[in-house]
Image (tube, rainbow, N blue to C red):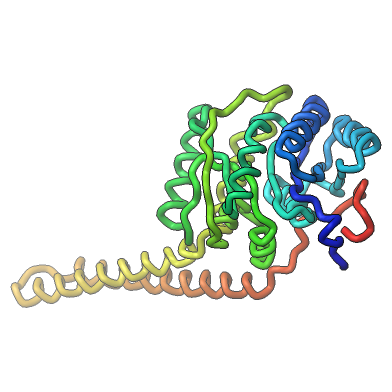
Length: 317
């Protein structure tokens, strides 16, 4: 596919994923346009709808008819909150890409500062929330996911960064080469190794509607994110197996000492055999997990989403 000429390429593409955002779509579009015009950049805005059941698509189609800079991708079904936004990011042609939510939890007022930092040389500029207000279960899950990412992840995760921010086109291109079938995009940004800056902000209230995430949705997201950003998890059974093997050796030594000192030895040797069996089991599980990881990395060709339609995209997109 031929890319658009450099003169036709916008400075910034803004990606806004949607699912049942009929109350917010028009307002977030107007707010983003106002801030982009204030920043003095050329731009387009790409909505991607994840099979909404309300009037979201109808409303965005009206926005597209009124402004050719507004574009729309409609998915054939709900592909989840990781794959759908990432697919839209990969469709963007801006020299930089901004990702943000449709419900005003990401303040559009930060857009000019993102652009300023990018023009000053930053490759990635992420917004970081000062606090994360949530219920007890959500809070514990979030804390657990960050703990696991810090201790088992292959690269550091920016805590309280949701992906709201600006990414240079070369960063997006690098992330795309990773070909992740379940892309944890804000983790992939760090994985690329490009220069990253953060901007701390207070979390604003939603403009309207309710959050589409529940506990199980967040749990699924956290597990997918951790699995996509950590290969060391697959090696935990190997570490458990190694520890089990060490315990088996210690128990065998204990049994030997008991034998020479005239004490009962049956318990020691039975325990050492059981520990050895567990060590072998976990060792083989670890090797199997690592082989699955290698196979996965060699065969990841699953499309992120399937599109039902797209609107206002030039033929060379």
